[in-house]
Image (cartoon, rainbow, N blue to C red; front, side, top):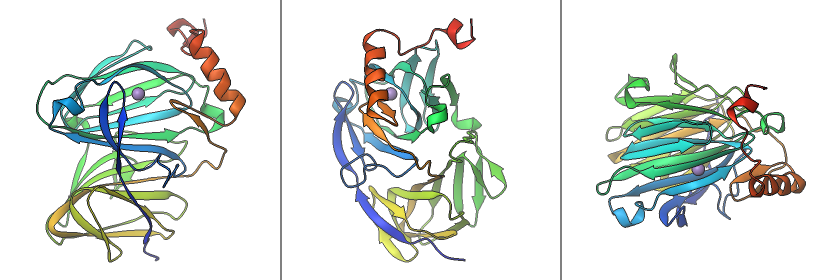
Length: 285
Ligand code: MN
């Protein structure tokens, strides 16, 4: 048994996205371009409507998955597949953009706290042009496990015999939201084949005995277990892991492909209105 230690710390820094929304980005910055299979991690958290009210009007994606976990607040989603959903506090949304989706993500609140995460998960070349798919889950649908004082919400993958709501066979993603009381310890086995990170968003923690501050992402080194202890004010963090794809990553904004030519194709398809397949085309008609 080898405990995973902190290999790299990446403080999240402010980025303006969408129509003028403030997010705190860690993966997807010069300090950490990506962490295969993860392309980007944005943490949004503000009770100032000026920082979120503009939302994310219609925009495209191709070549990967967006996974949004709403901690507080309410967001409306509409997309070119014809889905319309409301993402509420504690809920999650998994959108496989694959060959192409155009969607909007707009706040359904004009005041109060809006807080959550958006993670971009890459797709292997064999799935980048497959049909898009969309799933959303309310807070009540997400299983919760209590163990030695830890409260663990299992969003994706498996924890202590409980499976999360999202299964991602291409990268075997594990996504846990863990809340620990003061000085409590939490550990789990985590196979060496998966890349993993921890992001603390309340309190503070120690990973394998090393301090980890709030709003800092820790890339974990190799090993087969993870051990995290909460600080004096407790801790709440996400622990995420996934199997690396090991293919070239060429990104241009919302398009993530394997080659420059595929990016140019995505831009041309978007410009020509061909990024998005119609429902009939998706059924092979
Ligand atoms: Mn989007």
